[in-house]
Image (cartoon, rainbow, N blue to C red; front, side, top):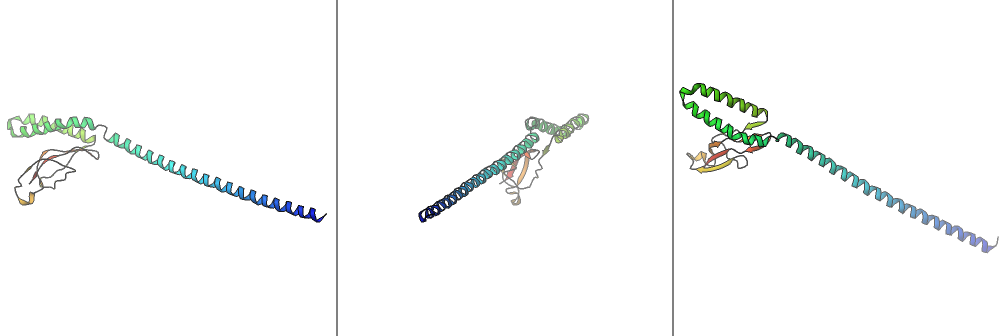
Length: 178
C-alpha cells in the first residue's frame, strides 16, 4: 500500500467516524425531541384527566343539590298555607267555644308540618332579642328600641323563615330596634 492509499484510508475512516458521531448526535437530538414530546403529551393528559375529575365531582355535587332541593317550588307554594294554619290556630285559641274545631285544625296542621319535615323542610329558629344578620334575616321595618340593649337586635318576628336541606328558601321577616 502506498502512502497515498494509507492516507486515503485514514481519511475515509476519519470521515466515517465523523459521520457516525454526527449520526449519533442526530439520533440523540431526535431521541431528546421525542422524549420532550412524550413529556408534553403526558402533561396534557394529566391536566385533561384532572379537569375531567373536577368536572365529574362538580356535576355529582350539582346533582345531589338538585335532588335535595327538587321540591323547592312545591315547598314555597305550601308555605303560605302553613302561615294561614298558624294564623287560624292563634285566632281559634282565643275562642273557648271552638275547642273541637281547634283540635281538628291543630291535627291537620301537625300532619302537614310533619310531612314537610320528612321532605327536608325546617323552620328557622329566630329569637326575639337575638342579633340581626342580614344574610339570614329580612328586616321589614325598624322601630325605636324599647331599651338600649335591643338596638340592632330583633324585636319581633313577623313571618317565619324556612330552610330546605341547607338552602334558605324563605328568609324570616323581622322587625329590628333602632
